[in-house]
Length: 382
Image (tube, rainbow, N blue to C red):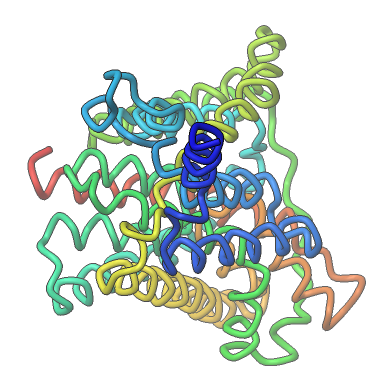
């Protein structure tokens, strides 16, 4: 009987109930909230479902992301190896290739002024950098945190790794992806605050047709120019443009389909679950993480506001030909931010179609955030 009792006691003490802290329960609750938002509310389920599930797993079974040095048999946990691909910048670069293969750069080519709107939305990044310095982050940590303002998860992970801020990579990645998913909640109040009803109802002229030659030359030219000026952006900008060249060349249909479908979804699973697995209670529930989340939100809000305000300026300069709402799409949450511009514009006038116009700044924002990351790496000599 003593053997049976001891066996049952061992089994009971192996359950998670005896090992979980109050912090683990808090993070499990957060995971449930994320799953609710993704499944019930439809907030970017491709991002939130794997992130939330990784969060759930690591707070029930922390060893799932343990390094080989932390285990008795010298073999790391499953998600440790997924996360290593984040640290090595492999998954963020592959995500960019998939985005390029899925994205039509035609609206940006047809309306080059979109580059300015995309650049204006990066204001939040540099504003947050100085705020982070004031809050006590060192210069590299401040740069890694501020890039959240671009609402670009892959770039946030990429820059944190390049600047040696792997200790902050988890909170930074979760904040960036969370704000990407919450674009439909965060952006509309800011957009409405800085625009009038008349401005939101402005209808823009149809974009000019873009030739096939222009679409083929665009990724080649952008790669050449950007990577010559900022070579450190090559992993992100290069993969983004390679994916787009697959799409537009018309001669590698199989590569384009693989990059935009099978590969993209595999990478999202690996990246999402590994990012979620960095949110153990010990790593996430602390003052530094709260600062990162707050700074990321402020940066994202400032970036949205800057894009809208610059859109208002262009509206005045062009005599009312540009709807300021498309400036909010200058953050690099593709295509969520463009959809929000369309939705807010349609609320004022259901016949107003801004989606394609907003895609120009949205794509420019992807390039702009990668360039901002390259600027930080150049400043620190990376």
